[in-house]
Length: 602
Image (cartoon, rainbow, N blue to C red):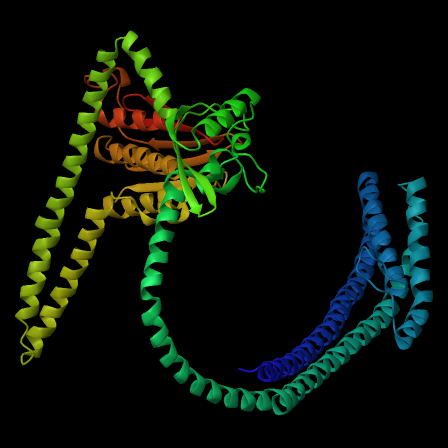
């Protein structure tokens, strides 16, 4: 489009933006105002409910006070009179506090104290009666404080009894007034809500008529123009695509190559003077470096040691034209020594510029392995290797058996049931509805068995919950499925609500160890209850598998060539060792078995 067209589009867009902002702001303001007003009325309603409850309680307290005072005339025991005196004091105190709070307000009781004029007038009429009862009750308490055995209390007791009825009548009137005022506020709130709803609907109608409808018409016109322009653009794009296919192919190949090098190799481009042009992702991660300028030297990224930096600079300067390949050992920012197998390759990025490609791979573990191999050679290397071969062969054999078991389950179980399902489907005769219905019921049962067979055959494979959600959801799914499939009572208890994600290798090894322990309890322990408990501290994750089975003597476990007991236990120990954890096995014949895993979290 032309410059004028772009300017017109911008003005139209700005105008529509302002209209939409005004419309949305108006709705937002109306909603906020509505919420403020409704919230204010609701808060008032809440305090009204508290006031009515406290006012109603005053009637009960006055009756309770009168009852306790009158009971003094029927009690002769000094101890009982003292107990009644304490009850009278407590009731009188609460009665007095509530009476004053209703008139003056009290934050702890939630009373605002903002009584209407008519309620205040009623309280003024009630106060003399209250004061008379309060004074008489106070006299009784004071007399009993001085002499618990005193019996000459007829006059104050009669005063309380006489004025109680008047207090109840006037208090009833006040409670009724409170209730009446609360109902008026509810009616007012309903009217306010209706008014706000009508106002909001009017605002929405006005916005539809003056903003959204004109905008929709404008957009429809614009879309029509865009469709015409799109048709022309498609024709132009087809022609342009034919010209750019070869270019795109080359760019994709270059990007794929660059991405592969960044993701798989320690890759960098530097100038002939040693400054960085490009630093690959793996280089940045290994040496914990991000952000560099045109003057950043490659040697300062590789090492924090000045002598090593000087060695790398001399190496680059000496071989910038001929290239070089070899091993170096720089020191990272974390003061950690790493071994690199590095190649320096000169190339011309442009006619007047020469650069160097740095392609390296980390061989720190390989170097450490070489040192470890030398140490193992000195310490009966052949014997340890033979042991490892035995374990490895047993692991491979177990994997093969598991694969054969799954294949057999699928072929003999699921395959046969699917064949039966096919034949049954083919044999359905729609003309005989009675037999058809019977066969459909049979097919439903057969389909359910197939589903159960698939779940059983694939259950020991890695569950999706493990990679998607972590170890706790995966173990929860494991015990739920085994509980259904085996009929045993299997429960998982997450004592400390552990929900952290761990490294994927750590999670899969924890899962396999727990799976092996639970399966052993199911197969060999004759247990009916199995409990998997999870707890953790700041540094340790602990998982305990308990069963109530027959148990065994760990010292009598059948020995294998690795010297560590049965292969299931061997695999568990190999896995726990791989993730730097510890495994404890406690069992006693007739007392069940406990398997404890402790895995470091840091």
